[in-house]
Length: 447
Ligand code: AMP
Image (cartoon, rainbow, N blue to C red):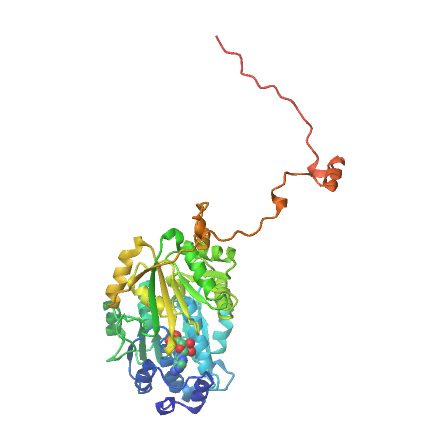
């Protein structure tokens, strides 16, 4: 029970208001160690409740410093949470705000891709908890918008992704700016050798906690594979989404930004509300798409792996792998978007024969095999999949065609009003050009 975790009643109140009844396994394991001041190395994916696992004890630790004073000097940065992507940073800060709503601790978030000046006022007022992406944090340090010399707790969220994204040099620079005497919590979905080295270099005698076994996809997620040719994938996806009703949402993964953008546009054209989030979209566009998805205004959110990192969408019932990821571990991250915090979810992969190799890699990683079901390709889905004119289907499968208005079959006849307009002398730019004649002839041949 949360009540046995030695958390302040005001923190417990916020948890209760969120409807959480008991801690998730990572929370139950991590919270007592963080409260005891230990460094922590936690293996936990998004969806396990990891954000509350570090935020709840963090709030408890900072509570003695909570102040209602307006003076910025009374609100130095005491905790720094580093996240690899803007989306994750925003979501972590939203969680910090949620859990801290009944205690006078301030927080804000800074990330790149938006005007740095907009973020300055919140920093100048003073915040105890700063959530940041590494690059933008360093920009603010250079602009002297913040000081990190009073940081007591450092949290590295999704540390594996931070290293994948090449943040190691930035991380090292940031770590140099922090007091040596501090508590460090490292959260990562995987414990690669690089992560172990990072922990060895920057954590002191850490406790290791593990939410799930290494690379094990959430057990609550029902996973299936549908074998389908590349050409038919779109139609199968459109049928799948329609069959569940447009109110039922899905996160759809593609490998490339281009496919994500094209797929979202194609779904829209098919009458399925969709949008895409990928690296080429501006921050504002991504936030808009994510908000529209969260508000249920769009059915399908199409995303690339990097853009989807850390997305926290409650009650997401379905993840579709439109294309399998190149890196098998990304499959685990993808399906971790559904079946969160114990809820049931479903992940369907549409696999073309050419992707078989990737599927085998995923099976090896998960130590399980998937039955290869053949997708049912309906004539309508075949038609919407194909860019080429669809071949006439065998009569038995042809859907009853919608009645065609005779009007389309009649030869063209100008309407009486159109004929009248044609008789009037034309004015302005549409005035018919004067007819001219030109004689084109070959120049005389030279002898
Ligand atoms: P996270 O792994 O931090 O991204 O959290 C995943 C989701 O689980 C978020 O939507 C949280 O609101 C939710 N959550 C966190 N802790 C609990 C809990 N103890 N009980 C139920 N839901 C939770």
